[in-house]
Image (tube, rainbow, N blue to C red):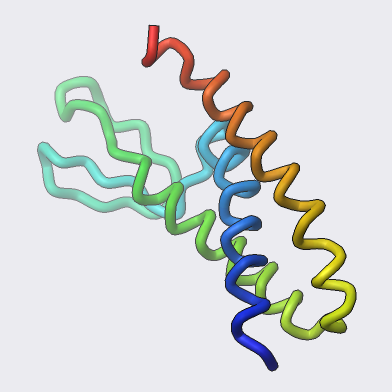
Length: 108
């Protein structure tokens, strides 16, 4: 197995998977800073406890998805990966545009 071909696949899969994970709010865990509590999955804490932090859960979820995709890609023929990586960069850049569109309220 050539690790140098797995890293680009992981990076691209991470970007592509992060956008729907963030949009549909699929964190592996939620952290509530005021109570210093962790909860598995999505947790909507009561208003008195302040909002929960989902960002780190989204990062971990995207990392798990990208890790699985990279592990599968490591088993594929090298020639196929060489063809797919340039094409998937287009999808990754498109996901960046989608992410900016979703977060446009933060920038305006």
